Amino acid sequence: MAIRGLRHRLLRHAWVLLIALLLPVIAPRLPVGASLTSAAPSVQVLNAVIEGAPGDQTVPTGPALTVMAPAGATVDSLAASYDRNPASITWANGFGPGVEPQAGSPVLLPPGPGALVRAQNGELPSQFAVALGIDPTVLLAYNVLQEDTPLAGGSYLQVPLADAPQGSLNPAAFVPTSAGTPEVPPSHGGDSFPYGECTYYVATRRSITWSGNAGEWWQNARSSRPEGEVPVAGAVVVFAGPDYSYDGHVAFVDGVNADGSFVIQEMNYDGWGRVDQRTIPAGDPSIVGFIY
Image 1 (cartoon, rainbow, N blue to C red):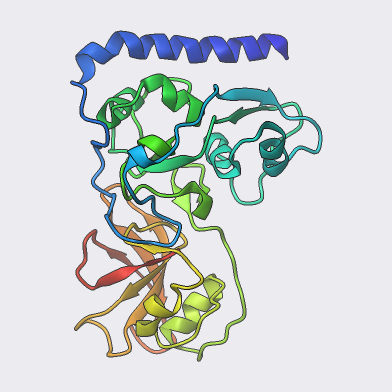
Image 2 (image 1 turned 180 degrees about the vertical axis):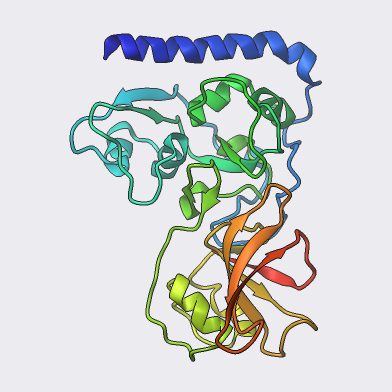
């Protein structure tokens, strides 16, 4: 165990050294808050999107820690023991829905709360850090990264909340998938909407605690669920416009593509009671927003 832990630390330090050597030739330093991603809307949302000036946030003190999880440890128990943020621990280690640390496994404990920023396809973590104006070693405090290799399009990295550009996603509202992308935590409630309608189908995929026609969901969900303009797997997308009825339309987001388009499953778009799948381009003007 000690040898494996030493090897892990050496790999991390080697990666930091590589970044330090490459930084002068990768890209010029950009102002704090600049980002290579264009998927950060400036929209007021309950708790899914980071708002306000990054400088208004308190910078955490102290280093990140890597601990060996004792038997029976959970994310919440580790967060309480070390006075850390549970959501930042979950995202840093890629713990999916219902996943807890395994006994004896290393767990990264970031020094404070984080925020999720989308990476461009093929972007290196070192380039990502430079674009945000942060030290590349800071990424190692908030993400388990072994080497400076290109990131997949649509994937997200966690950064300190103090350094997050406005519109970054709040990790507390999402769970990470194996692909490094956020997903709305899975849930399912009673199917209290009329069969055959778009609202009925979405209620079979998500726990819907509000009522109303599809066009009313955006307003009716606001008091109980965060909302925003960023497509995330597991979210409910609300549509309005000439391609839809006067009652509007809702669908379930199955996944998000690297180019920003997203795949939906829906009912009553191609016929009453029929379920179909479509890909919606990024920026489609009929999109009202997303309920997380």
